[in-house]
Length: 334
Image (tube, rainbow, N blue to C red; front, side):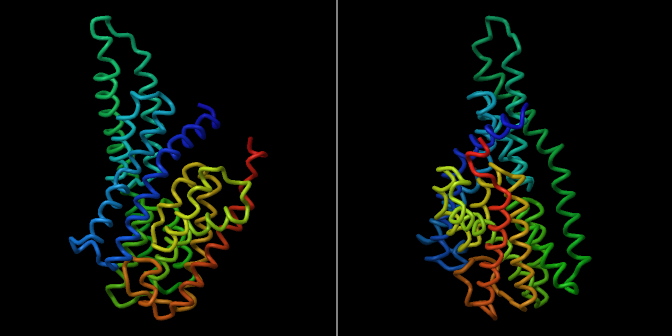
């Protein structure tokens, strides 16, 4: 498969994926806005908004994988791709695992479609044999082949962070920020977040402030880049501009995923640099944040709220600058 074909399949997946990110992210943000940072502990209207948003987020990796597979092998590939994406999400492989699940499902179903069956059962090919075999094979591959590396990554980065401790402020800030941006909800991201939570239990809230900066910078960096270099993003991507600002404000890094999925080699390094810069600044300024989630809605729980916000903005500027430099204009890319 050529690189252009893979890019086309990724863009197809992203086009179906964006509505789930936008709707889910906004509903989660509204839940936090109306119900506070512990909205998930209630059962009121705000909590229902939050959980509906979480439900949308719960299937978005499956949707991404399903339509990457669909782009390769049409409708019979949707079920294997969708389930493969859900398995990827369940095992902590995140959207990168979802991309892999979609590509595997597309390849497999395309091959299965070429298998000749007797005329008496050929009508069952697309409704029984391909979905059953495809879903089983892709699901098992994701669990047994992708799952162990995802678990290994999680354990490796947790060990790395524990070895760093909190002695090296700059190094810890770089690693935490870059990890938060790398897979946006996958094992690397989770390792950084869980480390910060564990350290917070000892009374040190600086890493948690840095981690939240690292998670808010990616969508902000992309939003800034779209404002500065409009000709380097397509119409669908510009349609997510408001969502990127919402994601940045509410600590929902997933708003950056469609852009990372469509152009991973340029977007992921850029947001990693931006998040690392923002997290380092937060650590050097001695910013703390005594809240596990909530984004700007919990800024008052910081010891230096204005400096914390400044860290986010500067990280966004750094990430946007790198992204603008790396991305060609659409005409040049055509």
